[in-house]
Length: 300
Image (cartoon, rainbow, N blue to C red):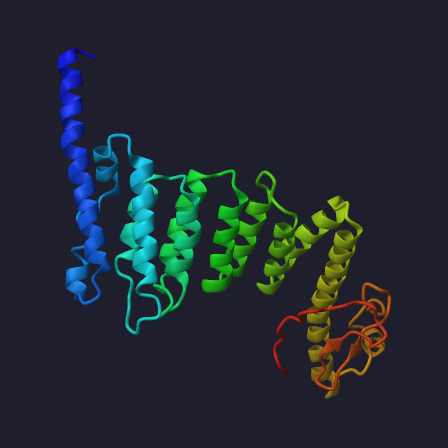
């Protein structure tokens, strides 16, 4: 670099950096004011473009990101619980923060909470929270916590159980990921009635777990899944039996003797299933099989 070019760069820095920090100071002053209208609040972000700020920062990216993250927290904290608050500037602040410093994990993790919580404790925008955390996953791909946070958003806020299960499973494959992520993935898959996914995860846990308690837990869940799949099939046969005989079967033996089954249907512990008065298949009270959260089944 020539001496003249170096001089121009220094002059640019001497002009741009003070202007930039003056803009941020003005932003802070405006955010702290409590009597503005929504229209006035929209003027708080004097520089809304993260990429532009990154160019103007001249190497101060991380410092500016910390400042914008601090403003994000202050903006959220001074408005939480206020009736009618919409947190309209929260996403722009977080967008700028994570553009300036894509590795600032705290901004993704806590920013997602601020965005996803329902009013008046948050912006009630789980869609933006998902977008923010996806950005974090892309920027910090080897950290299991980002994928775990994304799985929680799908599960808790969006009720998208298949996607939540798949995300938790992806998180479990990251370096140093805890074993419980696979367990959660399997449980969420079962909640979403994805038998095959849940069974595959629990089977892998049973086959690979070294901890006896984890192995036992996986085995119990596999038994429960098998029983619940059997329930669905037996419920169908019980309905067919009623159409033919005008009543529900009282035992699986009746289904067998009537030709609906090729044998006596037994649970994973080897004990025959029974039927309730509504024609729903059930475990025998003496069965050791445990079903913690039975699946919803269509009423008769």
